[in-house]
Image (cartoon, rainbow, N blue to C red; front, side, top):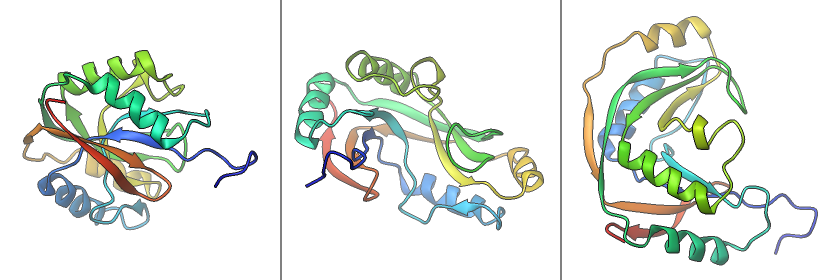
Length: 178
């Protein structure tokens, strides 16, 4: 049980990724040997962080999240390219990522921001759906990777997960339509 001085556990609602996306991210990361890379199965696509800074229990956050998700239909997503955040809001820079195009995901994020406060400089109007490939390392290697063309990957998002960032694992899942 956390004590009053412990930082809150960070939970989020994430989009489970198809293996084609995680394989692509891992393969691209191999071209950034000096960067912090994520292993297979560790890639995430965050729809919304939950309870930033509040000490709500996971059960309270999940109940509130499930209420917002009620009636949420499945929606489409597409990996369309490689980009970078030259200066990350947190952690090492640059952050090389796969771009995600999904009006349905953006709309869901906006709905969730109505019930869960947006994280400054990362959510709300600043939300950029993405899958991180790697952080930090050689800026020239990152710039070269961003120039690379990739085959788009399309999929239907028909499930979401409540995710525990401290443990790097999903806690529970929600099938769509919810």
